Image (tube, rainbow, N blue to C red; front, top):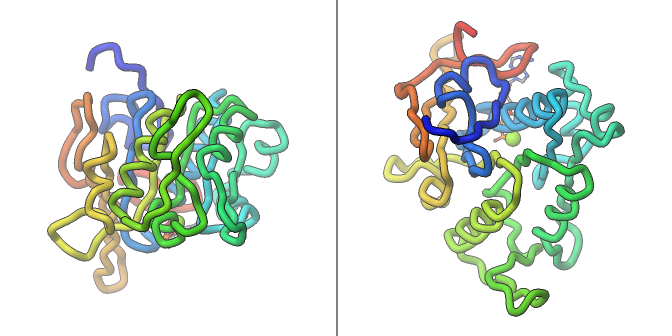
Amino acid sequence: MGNIERVKTGVPGFDELIDGGIPKGFNLLITGGPGTGKTIFGLQYIYNGAINGENGVYVSLETSTDGIKNQAMQFGWDLDKLEKEGKILILRIPMDVVKLDLFSAINDAIKKINAKRLVFDSLDALAINIDMFTIPVAYVGSRNRITYTGKSRRRITYLVMNELSKLKTTNIVITASSQDEKQITIDGVSEYASDGVVVLKSLALGETTNKTLEIKKIRNTKVNGGINSYEIDQNGLSLFGN
Ligand SMILES: Nc1ncnc2c1ncn2[C@@H]1O[C@H](COP(=O)(O)OP(=O)(O)OP(=O)(O)O)[C@@H](O)[C@H]1O
Ligand SMILES: [Mg+2]
């Protein structure tokens, strides 16, 4: 549609479903249950960008830098090498500092490698550990920030999405899905606060696992709707038949 610049995820079969890629600057939410492939999707996006001239930052709240690198290496994605070449940066967010200015750290990382892509893994881990972070709610003058110190999961989600939108990068934001049928994600607001929503589901059926990917919305985009099957193999995540 139109002249919107699009960013290819490089996940085989996925970009075709969303008019060629994620609209530049968007926050695309990837949600799903444990082990559905959210992290793999994010890593694939960062890896494909880096080997095609778009540097990326992977913000990890859940897994150590080595853990992330090992997971990627299973698919032959050598993040260690790309990091040494300055094409990616894994920003491991520590949980043992008193308070971390989260968006200062993210902004520094983006500047350092001139990143065009960013993955935030994950919003639900942030919400659980909110005591460890300061997140801006307002700016007074050019320097002074007022930061959030409350604990509302919904408020945090909006604040983080808003800060992510201000970055120049195109972002994949990961969060856990809900068991409650009335909402998509665990906080019930990320699906509204993001520009696009992709739901991953994994359902065990006898000896096989039925994995489905559903695009719930992507603003400014003609979406090929419906539910698509996907698989994870030695090459990473791909839509079935691709
Ligand atoms: N080489 C592989 N072949 C097939 N499946 C694999 C392979 N490597 C990993 N997987 C599958 O990928 C899944 C893990 O993916 P990933 O870590 O991206 O999930 P996640 O959604 O991020 O989980 P969590 O919510 O725990 O963070 C596992 O369930 C595993 O079955
Ligand atoms: Mg994960």
